[in-house]
Length: 117
Image (tube, rainbow, N blue to C red; front, side, top):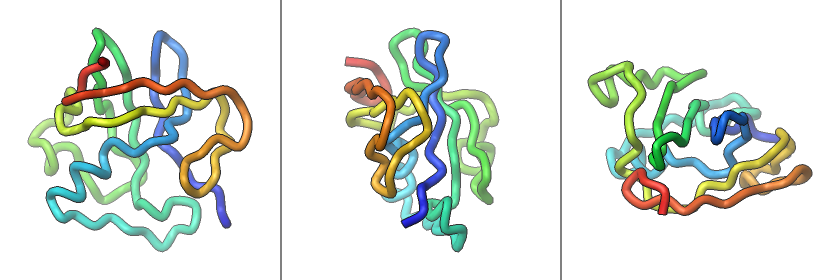
C-alpha cells in the first residue's frame, strides 16, 4: 500500500508528522466527503496544526478543495474545539496507511474540546 501524506503539527517549536486526523471528526459530523483518487492522499487534504497555549490550532488546510474560509468562515488559525482524542506526533515521516509510525519516535497527547488534558 502507498504511504499516505499525513498532517504536519508544530509542538514546542518542533515540526512533527501527525499520525491522527483531527479534521476527520468534524468532516464526518458535517457529512463532508473529501475522498481523493490520489493514492498518496486518499483523505483528499493535508492540514497544518499547532499546539500552543495548551490548545490545538488548525493553521491551514492544504492540498484540497476544502477551504477554511468556507468551512469555518475564517482563514485565521482556530482552536479545534470539535476534537476529542489522542494526537500521535511522529518524529519522522515514515507512517503506514493507518497513520502508525514505521520508524522514528512518537509522542501521544490527549485532547478534549481542542485543549490539551
